Image 1 (cartoon, rainbow, N blue to C red):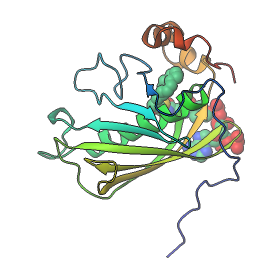
Image 2 (image 1 turned 60 degrees about the vertical axis):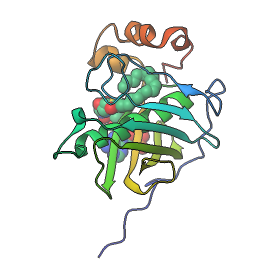
Image 3 (image 1 turned 180 degrees about the horizontal axis):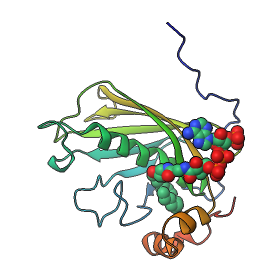
Image 4 (image 1 turned 120 degrees about the vertical axis):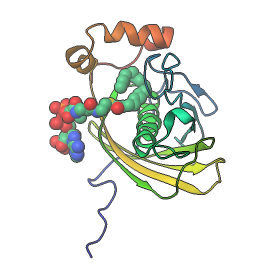
Length: 191
Ligand SMILES: CCCCCCCC/C=C\CCCCCCCC(=O)SCCNC(=O)CCNC(=O)[C@H](O)C(C)(C)COP(=O)(O)OP(=O)(O)OC[C@H]1O[C@@H](n2cnc3c(N)ncnc32)[C@H](O)[C@@H]1OP(=O)(O)O
């Protein structure tokens, strides 16, 4: 059997938060009201909520409902991946205060996640190499110290706002500003 790949897969530097990054104890707002991961306007969305803890840790919660089923009474694995994409991406975007997109996201499903449970997701920064930001997370059932149900690790790549205006909606910046309020105006959007 081959050894598991090392993580991060390339040499990295420690992650330094943006000087204006939210302090430990801060709640993170939604980044876009129509986002499936966090948006308030999405019926059946994941409605993930996150806050900053000490030592560059971000804590997120995903309350699993019937809208998120795969098998009867159990969360769909793809939506659990979405929850981690949101939690990890939110940590990267908010603490570096730059837009970033998921380049790679791996998940290990260790336990079933029932409808009615809440997944407590803890995200940590593993290192940065140029535009590449490596993060990992674990999701525990029903409490911050509950049993581990899902683990994930990901590469996010920082991008300019042109990523969204070119490939998505030409009005992306205005729509993000409308969702985030005045807080959006001083983001580093042209790496
Ligand atoms: C999302 C809205 C954000 C709004 C902003 C407001 C702030 C909000 C704050 C916070 C909340 C955020 C919450 C969001 C959560 C959800 C995030 C998502 O689901 S994002 C959607 C899914 N992901 C994509 O659609 C990417 C599609 N891929 C691409 O667009 C490109 O491939 C991209 C940008 C990732 C890289 O393309 P290149 O041309 O810019 O750069 P190249 O040179 O190819 O890659 C850069 C480096 O990364 C490595 N790399 C890229 N992809 C890799 C991969 N899959 N595996 C390994 N390395 C990879 C490359 O090898 C390269 O490394 P070397 O610099 O040469 O060392």
